[in-house]
Length: 523
Image 1 (tube, helix red, strand yellow):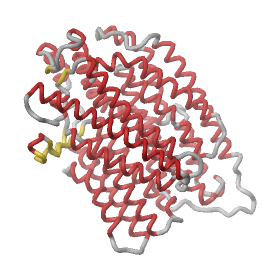
Image 2 (cartoon, helix red, strand yellow):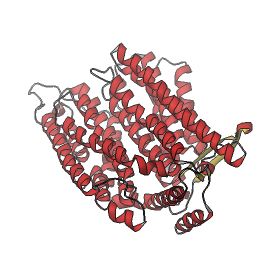
Image 3 (cartoon, helix red, strand yellow):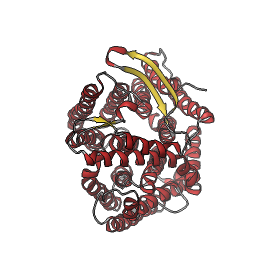
């Protein structure tokens, strides 16, 4: 069995090697990046042979002693949710390595880009697998630093690079504030210093403390979107970089709210639900409007992807099994769509016209139709479940005796469904524009897809079609873990509602038994 630590750390080791390896051959650097990204994917696929989705808790754990005086350990583990997300993050990194956008770079710029992307991959994988909060914060800082380097090396505007650097500081301080508040509260409660996720998830905080921590967590998770929006405006020295930078924050945002926001701060989540729903609906509507505005393909795709963030957030806010599962599925689907569009932008950089690159028109049709949410392709199932989860939310809230999180979920579901149709129309219009409006000239020179591009397109298209035809396979993997997280959050919220301002304490025995009974049902 491949160690989870190697899967997470090999890209970081590759990043160091990319900066120090004495070579003047660009193929060596690209081969190093492709090899490290491929190792992470192969390692996770090998690890899945012993992975059982029906088991509760985390599997394939690595738990090494680290900074003992403060209770920090190098603790990693995965469940069915983080398993799929790790594979997606590694696939995005591999797609960037295989794409031809780096062909015109100097050796030094290529060296920097490969090192930065591998560091970004390692930081993202660490955040997705960390079960120790100090370990998570270190990987988060690594990912943020790499994120900023990508923006600074891609943006052609100096003031944008400066603004993104200034925006990164509040994000880091917000995450640090959450960690310090939780860390001190745990010590007052248990008398020991610990950063273990399992211990933190068994804690009930006063309602006001939950609201403060959830607000800080939201700032930390939303900040990357502001970084991309400010740093990638206008022309970019790296076409398509905004797509990769948009896919990873959506993934981390969905994972962070589900893994930390909902379990740690259930009472605050209920109080903040109307605000979060408003943000989600506004994002979906805004994305639908932007998808129907003409712009350069890379700028248009980045702006339209605001709607994907709205779908992911809305599904989690519903706190229903259908909505949350749809949200997680949508993260996977939008990641694949981002990867596909990134490859198309790279191919168009060589041919200028779709028809000048052999085989690109078919790829363009499949990828844009998938992103538009056409049934039978990957994005449809996620969007459909998010809307359906919102429509059925009142009945499910009543079934589990939970208070209504926000008013008129049915109207909100209808608004989101209408916006989703407008979003799809925008993608179809861009498809017609690229495929029809950019027909090759009779004297135009034809180009072939590079071997790396063909491999990347084959993997992405196969995953899109596979998720679209057999979404139940992934949803079945998510179901036990989603149900356990929701059941635990509901029991904790009910207990906290009975004592809204009492001192922080461990979960009441009766509530703990109720949660344990739900979890044992999936053993």
